[in-house]
Image (cartoon, rainbow, N blue to C red; front, side, top):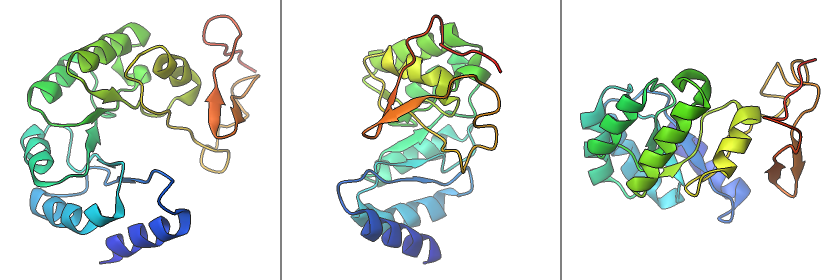
Length: 183
């Protein structure tokens, strides 16, 4: 009930025009996930993120059959082969690779291409300074996860130039490479 109350309060506060996602951070078992998704469907969530531990592809796939809420995952997947298995198991609707743990940009792009071949969107996990370029470079890039100053204690301490936000959109730097200059 408390989890549903949180989602209900946020939905009421932001209205219907703002996308709302919920991250379970691998904390649910299948029966609880099924129950929660039934309760949360009326709040029009964009997705439920990581309801289960990464290797429980069977539960991911079963939950997708039980709910209209899209299921996302993959931030704890470290190889393109793991993403292949997620796709083959029909475990998620949205893949969330992280180039920093996946083996770099080349591996990320391979995962993005694999996702595109299966009509899946990609919403990369974290590392906004890197992923702004990658999500913009792929046709199935859905959204950029962006950590504000109040959430990211390293904001303003690593890079010479921070990302620019205009009208709710993050702008990709136009400097060479990733546009990152260490302080």
